Image (cartoon, rainbow, N blue to C red; front, side, top):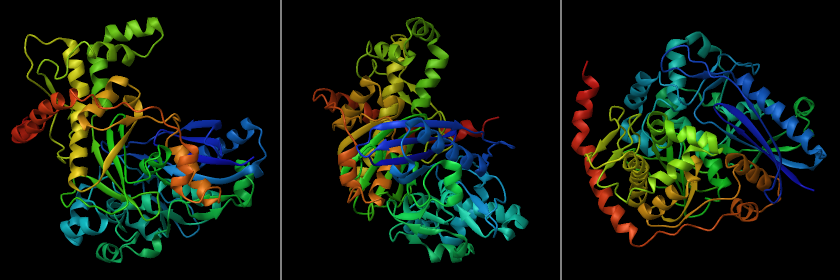
Length: 508
């Protein structure tokens, strides 16, 4: 038999899954680790925790399965993006990693924009300077911890540190590197211009590979710790969203996925690079060689429904507990009591500010049109519709950039709701599918490993062999114009309230 391992290095923990070559799960294991927040807005993790979690879970899935480790033909890694790992000349970690959600680098983002130029930065890196990205973290360490920066010999991303511990190689790949703000995204290589303007030595950075390329092999030392066979190939892997795209089969033009988790993502594959000059959506290299993806983000997607549940649905939570079901199942049934448009009630899901399309940290959530006729069920459905309209904002930008959207996959907790999936189909006016596997990024990483190991000739053909989808929910023709009428009102509200949001933010 031939098997593949996918490692999904997340923020709360690492999950490792052993698959056979058809995509069937043979065994899996997870291990959590802490995040450190010494100051408001800071977020750090210990790279050693990632490595120990990866090594332990690899060993566990091999032992649980009872397979011969020699039958594992390849290993792929998916990882949280943007984190900064700094090593000295001996490969020792110099400080905790500053991870993706850290917000300390506003001044460094201004420094990057000033040195590179706002327009030029987007042309090269396909994104404006953002606090979450890696380049601003590098500058922060240089500005605030010069003694640490002086000792730095290697800069890696989180998953690439685990790769280093597995193989001894300093390597990354294009999808994750795109989020560092140092990569020339159109040309898929480090940008000499950006590095020169920011005075960062290219020698600090790892070699860049395509995602399914073999970057190294398991060392004898790593084999003892993980149970893998020395010499097992390790491929480039991918950043978390790029790996999720592979794991859902979004690897051809016309395919996209919508994730409704705490935040929401609309992610589309494109064989031809397209960059939004306004920086409202992210363009990154994707895990398919020679292709890219474009991604819009809703900050408060599933978070909005969780907020409503926690504050207004105590009865549903008690009833669900007694029935042994998820309270969201009951909330779906209750939202169905309200018609499309929620009796003329709209919700803006800006609980945490917004990314796409507004890039506004000051905007906040709004119920618009509230009257004495409205019930809790109207408000509940309005939350779900408002999140859907927010994600359509991303879809409209992608369509305006020439990115095709013919088929949509639904992922995340919200994607498991038939009602929410139907809203997506009707609001987007396109079919919405789900995949049968729930492993997402881990499956995507394993698929990339299968290509690198030679089990499949391409990422697309590997996805065809290893991914199964459920029947799509088609848009209901009479619902499409009804939703569209309310969406047009929805999209007019942010411009009308923009200055009010700023006034509210400034008020004492």
